Image (spheres, rainbow, N blue to C red):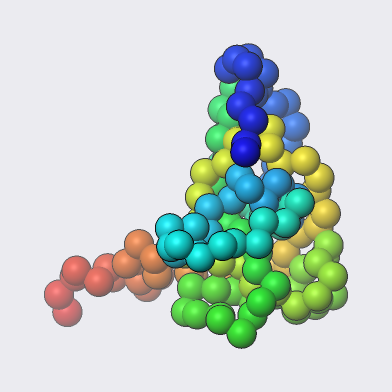
Amino acid sequence: MVTKYKDFDVIEDDRSFAWGEIWKVRDALVTLLPTDRVNVPRNIHPCRLIVITQNCEENNNKYFPVIRVAPLASDIKYQQKFDILLKKDIDATGIDKTCMIQMHLEQPMLKKDLFEKVGEVSEDKLYEIIALEADLIGLDLDGQTDNDEE
């Protein structure tokens, strides 16, 4: 069971968070679809690594308690179109083996729940995040959208 904070004042967070940082969070706070919505038991770990996918002024605003993140998964055999592979010591610091960012599972999280910064993704992978974000919303980085007629 996930315990709740007593009041809104408690969730204020004056730490700074940067796009592409890798943090630890309690695994029970991360939603993993479709697994969490199917009658199949999920192995809840003490913590899960996430990547900060939000890059705006609110990352450093203590009165804005929510930040957007994407979970990491170590089982890469199920890698799909919207997963970004991270190779240990090449694409990111703070990971102990090759894993993937599950961009399609991007979700809001309270900054207060991020309890330890462990590393960050490489600049090349930040550009992959941008490209996938654009693809997820149907934006062509050349200026077209999926709905535009040619």
